[in-house]
Length: 443
Image 1 (cartoon, rainbow, N blue to C red):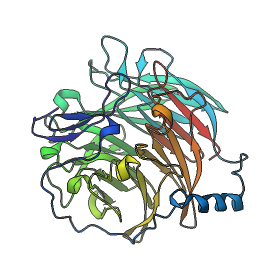
Image 2: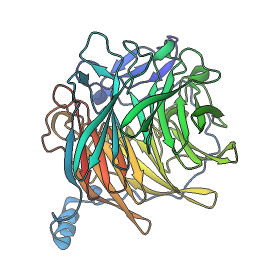
Image 3: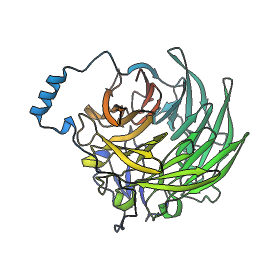
Image 4: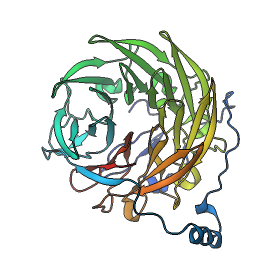
């Protein structure tokens, strides 16, 4: 875990499913998490500040106004919106917390299961492919040098026929990332990535993302938890480190690199504990082989303990940044768009039925004009939900609220989410004895 004096926010398993907050040895469950202290406040950097976004939503209107609007609009249509296509489960029955991480590219989905019932458990990632409307398991991925407790599958990413799996606790938490490729229907390990300057407790691999032949790997523990993110590129079958990304105003305990994503030559990196856990997200752009920071994103209404940057996602010129601890852990997600070289806040997404303790924003994904946001504690006893939003002419609106067809208590449905065009994947690692992942279509 690193030096005792370090300030850390980590998500791990305890018993069934529990989110752990460790701050100098203090551990609390999600329902009791109210703030994250990172020492004396620092003066904020020169962030790119967006125009003030409206927080007015129907859910926050007076009850009489809500009723009047809904009466005018009529009942919600049951003819449109996503429908559940499949429930994915591992074929071997040894996995636990299956659905802890998910990603999808085309008709291939990958699901992480970092824990299992076996005495020796390095973790695994499962690959599923769709033919028509039928999903089948194609492969189970494991590390060539996997060891008990590695938590392989804690974070995963896929692009085409390439999968990246982050293992941030391996080698005294120096961390590694594994690359797998598919030839026909056979998957094989192509590379094991490490940071050129990695040391113990860097937690390289805590977050991973891939776009084509470029992958980004977060290392939030680097330099006293200031954090860093590393860019690797593939030439033929060889992967090499292209850049080490750091924040221009980085400071100890920012945890830059806790979350990462990439789209083409643009990357976004979250620093959820920056400025007393108000949080920030940084935009980087590649020109040739050189990466440079272009913007620092902050919420227009950001406050201490929001943890803005807990999750990030990008699709073209649109970025989605989550702050699941905002407003007594109700949670919020923010949309930013780029015009030229300027990033500005376009919208603030909230659940139509959001309440304190939902943790809306625990997971996020975006593809084109569609976004999905997970809320792990929504519903009775942490069953969870995921919300789908669509953009029309710059206006974002909630399209649907997704739940599992066989939802039960403590499923934490929405713990992980991914989106590819009209297909959504949602992880529920607490479901049943092994966890489950759900596929929805017709977004």
